[in-house]
Image 1 (cartoon, rainbow, N blue to C red):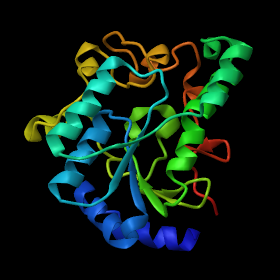
Image 2: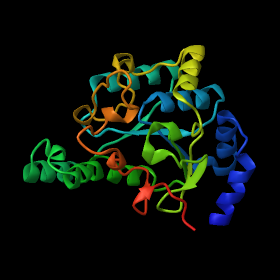
Image 3: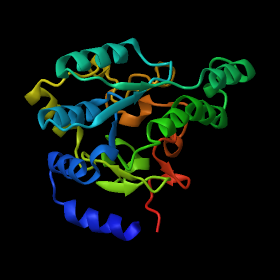
Length: 241
């Protein structure tokens, strides 16, 4: 699998983001899905998928703690592109057990409890969403965080599934240029100094000059600021050899 990965990486290393998506659709066909959290990156990718008429299933994870603005954006996006986003929710019994044992805001108490919350609300639903997929697309970028500096255009996840990051080398300015050019809908919280938007309880606005990742899990140190969606063998999306 690793040799196949390296061959694909060499083949597409100079492709544009749209060419990467076209390549992925051609090679993975019905086994390809797009995981969107409705951030800037995901909206750019979704627009590329729609403008190129690529029939790729789009899904999102509703943790039950999202901002109202995020729900509004989901509805706005479906209406603009005449598409349907498949939504996966955490299991009720798991959430109830966690809250009853540790409290409604347990994630503030320790890193272990925060990771448990992410496991229940994000990772388990993600595993169901990807169960029948050979490859998935997401909006990871090198610039997003110190934990993501090694992100590449294509990688393997923890289940040896191909993971495609079309915007891995884009910067924020390039994304905004694209959004303005194609009138792509985006979360209005971005206009209020929210560079990265997740659960309402774990996301805040940042001050001018602050690192873009400071708005997520601000009570933790930078190297711990991952929910686990993009972790392989304890590290962020390292390639298995």
